[in-house]
Length: 94
Image (cartoon, rainbow, N blue to C red; front, side):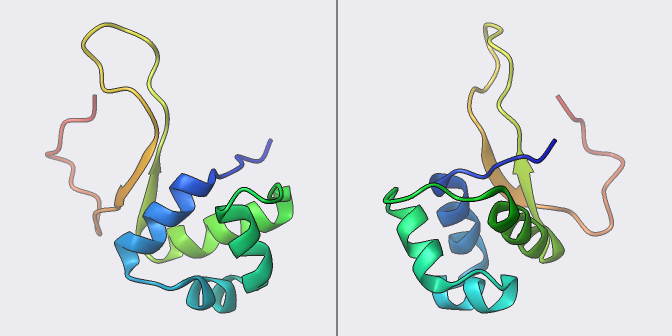
């Protein structure tokens, strides 16, 4: 089952990398028009385009953070962050 990205996650990942829509489009093979329309929520992102974008962003050390379960005291919501290279084993994962 493919994980579909949201417009907010794609914008955040681009900001983290300092990439324009055009740069992400060129690197991923998704048209800039499709990316722009999706980020402005004018049309849905296809599973294929989402996979291409996700693969490209993850190849550039962006890590997508899953939404946490609704348990009191936990941080809620998804997001993006740098993926440590190599992964640090001394970091506590909650």
